Amino acid sequence: GAVVSQHPSWVICKSGTSVKIECRSLDFQATTMFWYRQFPKQSLMLMATSNEGSKATYEQGVEKDKFLINHASLTLSTLTVTSAHPEDSSFYICSAPSPGGSSYEQYFGPGTRLTVT
Amino acid sequence: EDQVTQSPEALRLQEGESSSLNCSYTVSGLRGLFWYRQDPGKGPEFLFTLYSAGEEKEKERLKATLTKKESFLHITAPKPEDSATYLCAVQVGGGYQKVTFGTGTKLQVIP
Image (cartoon, rainbow over all chains, first blue to last red):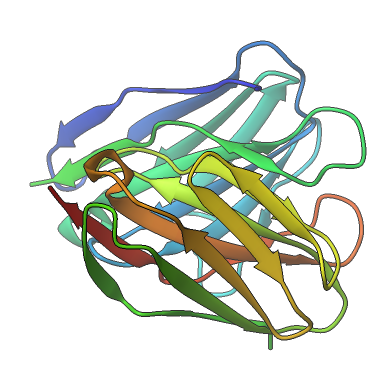
């Protein structure tokens, strides 16, 4: 199956700083990628849809100025958490749709654990 | 609003004790229903896609079924390595539309 990677796998930062998370499709191109957030013992909540070459689409309640998304190429999307606060501590996961065909399956990255102190 | 509800929240089984996980959904225009497995601290791993009522898919000890209102993930003779959280998700509309996840069922299989 298609492989999606994320970097870093975990990061600790101080309150007020910014953190960038990368999501890469390793063996296929993805014009669309998705960013999710998962709090402990909760399911995945879609934050935004990242579109190559255009602006991201954010879900209701997600601050676009706080969570900056850049889809610079067909294999890379980045999520930057700006001015991070402890409440932003969470597990961030990206995904990309299955390449080609009629399948709407999504392949997920391994996730990035963000801890803001 | 699209809703996906999974039950039970947690399930504890003895090794070899078969059971089923439920995913009920309320959506308009279901495009696909997905089952994922998620291990602690990792991203979800794709298991199955079901597109229409009556469809069934199998993979090793897992079998997924779909009706117009719900989906079941049947686990036959589970092993400890099947312990994980199983997530159900639905997709509506065409193209690469967003996927709505349920809250998951945490399965523990005891040797």
